[in-house]
Image (cartoon, rainbow, N blue to C red; front, side, top):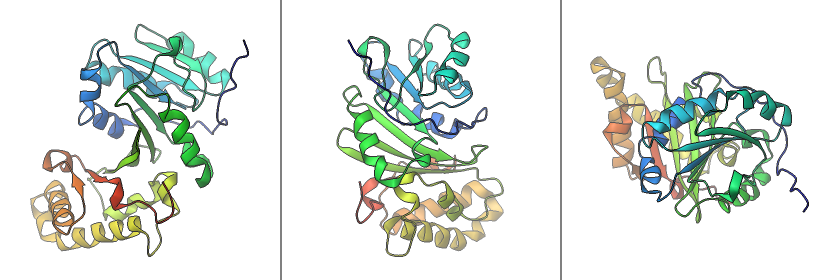
Amino acid sequence: MAVQRPVGVITRGTTNPNRLRRCDRWLAGPQAWRLRRAPATPVVVDLGYGASPVTALELHDRLRRVRRDVEVVGVEIDPDRVAAARPLERPGLRFVRGGFEVPVPGGRRPVLVRAFNVLRQYAEDEVEPAWATTVARLAPDGLLVDGTCDELGRLAAWVAVGAGGPESLTLSWRLRGLERPGVVAERLPKALIHRNVPGEPVHALLAALDEAWLRQAPLASYGVRQRFIGTATAVRDAGWPVLGGPSRWRLGELTLAWDAVRPHQGP
C-alpha cells in the first residue's frame, strides 16, 4: 500500500516557549467542552509545531488540566524535526510526520487541531484548500484553529474553522503597554491580512476598536483592563457581533462571529 505524501510544504519553523499561551488559554477555556464531551480519549493535534516541539509539550500540559487522558499529537512535515522531537515523547504525547491531512495514528479523528504560524507562510488562495483538507479529518464538532502571533506571543489572532467553514475570529493582546488595539493588524491570519484595506469588514473592525479605545481613555485611570472592557463593550453596543463577555475581555481577548469580518470575496 502506497504511503500518502504529506500535504503542505516545510515552513521556517521558528518558535519560542510560551508563544502560543493565548490560544491555549482559549482552548482550555471557551473550547474546553469539546474535550469534556468526547466519549473516548480526545486527540488534539499541534500541526506544524516547528523546529522545537516546546509548543506541543505546553499544549499537553495545559489541556491535561481540562481532561487528564487527553492525547496530543505533534505533526510536522519535516522528518528531521519529527526525529528531534521523538525523544521527548511521553504518555499522551507523540510526534509524527505529516501535513494538512493530519495523519493521527490509528486513523483517529482529532477534536482540536491547532495550526499556528503555518498558513501565514502560504499564498492566500491556498488557505481554503488547506482548511478543507484538515477539517475533513476532524471528529464531529471538531475545530481547526488557524492562527498567527508575534515572536513572544504578545499579539495573536486566530480563526476557528468547523465543518461548515470559518465560525469566528479571535483577537488577543497583551494589555500592559498597549497603545491601540489596531496594532494586531500585523498578526491577522492569512485569510484576512491582505483584506485590511478600506472597504473590507476587518478594516472597519480595527478602526472601530481604535476609535472605541480612544473614547475610553478616561477609564485608563482605573487600569488598562477596565479601559479594554470599556472598549469591547462599546464595540459590541455599536452592533459588532462580539461573543463572550468581560471574563474574556479582561484577558485582552475579543472573539467575533466570522460573518462580521468575512472578506467580500473569500471564505
